[in-house]
Length: 195
Image 1 (cartoon, rainbow, N blue to C red):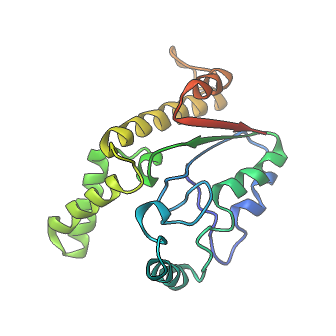
Image 2 (cartoon, rainbow, N blue to C red):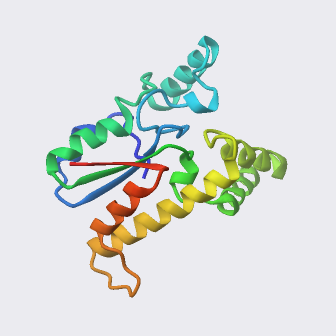
């Protein structure tokens, strides 16, 4: 789910994904603030929209990861392109939904994360709540909370049913992977690509 293709000092996913023989379901969003399907990380949150912010983001990436390529070597699309070699890869490309939404983290989970981060940093709940508001509103479009909740439910549904189908966990309401792909193709929020 929203895999990062910028891992430093090891083989990046887009160079090894094609070696995986197990079925893969990959999720991404072009408005993901951290690992978009393609394009510069941070674009949707305003980072990278001007030369100052681009310089700042590049500097942070260099300090944190030793990397100045904000596209993360082609992003999730590059991972999918390599994964297609296996013949078992499917990509669900969401039109909306930020990084936390794609991770299945809803508003309550994000609030808890923000509170935990604020407590650990000693900066109290004010910063934590600001972090939550920022994460919910970045890259989520005009109706951020509604879009976020829809994406969270969608990702949880598709990921859970994919895993149930592929690891043979019998459920009374189980949906086969073929049915999942058909459902996703009918969803206006998702573009489905398969190998």
